[in-house]
Image (cartoon, rainbow, N blue to C red; front, side, top):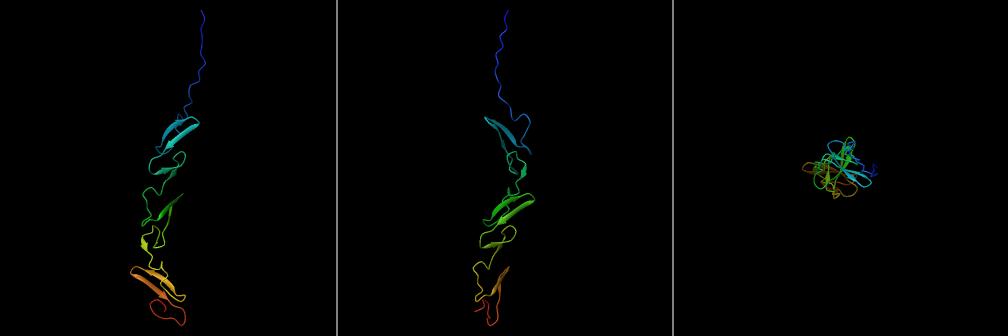
Length: 121
């Protein structure tokens, strides 16, 4: 009696060690694996909290994820941590070197010497 053993390689299950963190799902690929992360997580293995998930930046601001939170980059007409405040000074309304200070209901110009008026004319 002769026993013949066939030497076949079984595909390597790279997901067996559960490499995807924080509830991410793993899918085997030819040269590794891919993690599909939940909405609050990003990174190759879903290891980084996605602080931008809820779109915290208002009025068209762009969110940049950071380790301990996020930073919003606001458009020219908006200011504030989440671009929530309209920037009444964005058009430089103060003339002749006056300094504009944004206020809830408008702006105030601080004029240099020899200039007066709401916009330092």
